Length: 182
Image 1 (tube, rainbow, N blue to C red):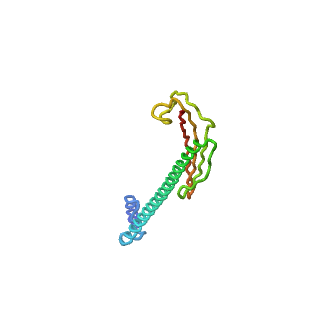
Image 2 (cartoon, rainbow, N blue to C red; image 1 turned 90 degrees about the horizontal axis):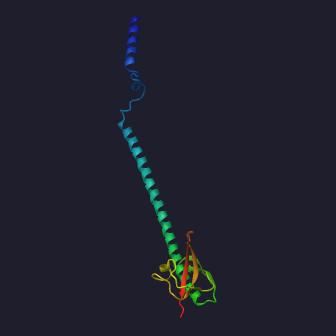
Image 3 (spheres, rainbow, N blue to C red; image 1 turned 30 degrees about the vertical axis):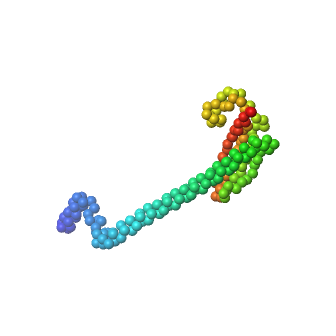
């Protein structure tokens, strides 16, 4: 019995020195005996990371292509709207020469785009200039000043271009035509 006590005391003293005496290595299988298994786990983890990065880059590229395609479609609809606005300016010149006509509204085809064009005279009679300088005169009638004699009419021109995928552009212009007195 003394021998048992002595061995038990030694075991408890060794337990104080090392709180977990061979607990991990005695009850669990040895991991360092199979290095091929660890290499396979590392390779599998690396493949998963590479697949995630690859799929993310493919998603970003396709999303960027969709954004670029939408921007291109919008720009072509915008160009069709500008073209129909130029047609509207020509119609305003025609309305300025033919005073018996009031307004013109119609849907025109510019390339493969439908554009609704509306041209209307904003004043029934010509506005006579007083000869004084107007605010923003350079932008309206030339460099620096307005003509000393004459009058003008204004025309409101609006166009709405519509693309096949639903893109819409609306442009508006207030055009002024000066009528010089003879």
